[in-house]
Image 1 (cartoon, rainbow, N blue to C red):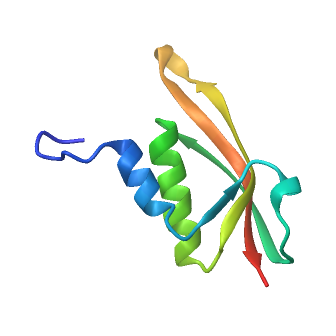
Image 2: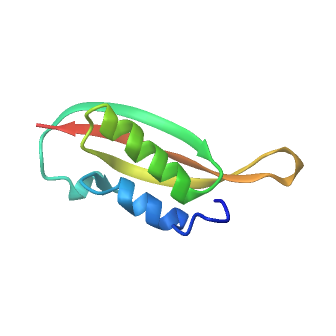
Length: 92
C-alpha cells in the first residue's frame, strides 16, 4: 500500500467479494454445483490472498468458494504468510 492509497486491504477485499459467495462449509450451500476446482495459494496476508482468489475466479466464471480454509505459513528467515485453500464452484 502506497502513501496516497487511502483504501485498506480489507476494503479492497470486500469490494472484490461483491457478487461472489464464500462458504466455510458445504453445509451452508443449498444450490446445485455444476463445476469445481480445488485451489491452494500462499499469500503475504489473508486480505490480499482472498481478494486475488475472488478476482481470478470471478474472471473465469465461478460463482463462489466452498470450504475456505486458512493456515499460517512459515518460510525461511522468519517470513510469515498464510496458506489459503478451498474449492471454487460454479452453480447451476
